[in-house]
Image (tube, rainbow, N blue to C red; front, side, top):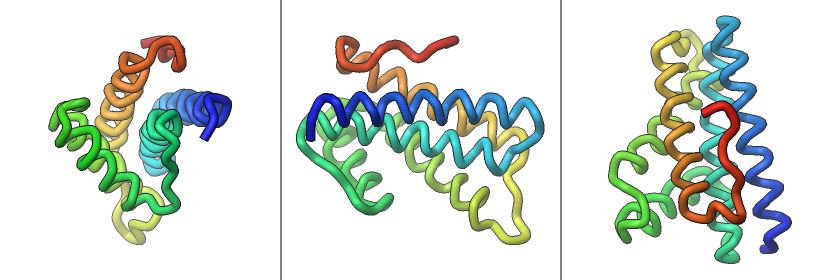
Length: 134
């Protein structure tokens, strides 16, 4: 993967993060949780892309986050939990049937995504510009 691909993924992460913030402010909690997850997803994807790694399944990326970032000490255990939380709450928001994401869960997902984006930025600030408004 190229640096250009990684930057495109980073831009998608920032766009998803901003969308999550707007959605939660207007009561769109399911959609806000989904966008928060995709902010984390695209952020982690950008980081791995610079290592020449891509993933075709959400579960494969989650596994890589825990195995290659958390277990190696590049990310804290808390960041690994944040990633998994975002993935779980996205599942509720997108596929929850009669279960809905509430305001607290959506806000927590946005904060988890924010921490993940900061970790990606902090790892390679020259490649990934700061998260606006944070």
